[in-house]
Image 1 (tube, rainbow, N blue to C red):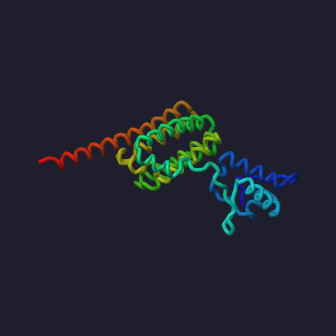
Image 2 (image 1 turned 90 degrees about the horizontal axis):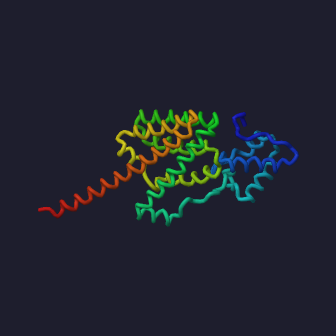
Image 3 (image 1 turned 30 degrees about the horizontal axis):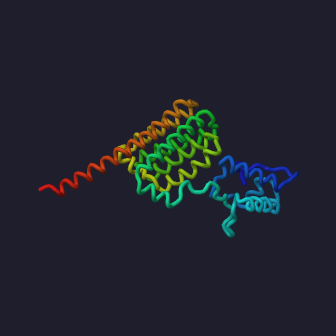
Length: 257
């Protein structure tokens, strides 16, 4: 394994436990996120400087603790630890009662604002490099009118900001929320693009959030995050109102003579 590996060599005083402690810490810190496949045994043993038997002993301990699960023939994966943010039944309920959607946006507004503020204060150089890279990808996607790449970069940026907050509870909780977003449970970003026109407003909002974080300005970062989420909410409210007006107009037309 190369020196780009996030895993560190361990001492030999209690090799298996040292391996367990390191992997547990990486899970707590959100470096190894649920569902993430661990490197192969050979790669891990090389990176950590431990024997394969000691590594297997550590992996067995982690599996017994419910932190990883081993798929024979596939490898070891970080277990699902936070569970689903909402059950399928509750998701269906939200779909039938549209006002609940705005509770979801309200929750996200507060968490996104908190994350942006913390990220502006705590982001490491590595975090900043990651955010810069994603913003570049966003700009390219917008220039090429690539909606799929734009949507993926959008989500990656929000995840990167939360990761840069260095708040492990927030990292794990928002991972579940973003999973719902990735599945398009609550809304489709394409709808926002139709409200935006070209997607330029969304791009500018994301650039503002990123720039505030990169310049270490917590107040500006928090404000930018709130402005972005307000835009999302207002866009959906306007869209819903337009749909309702069109439905009423269609009914009037059917009754007109």
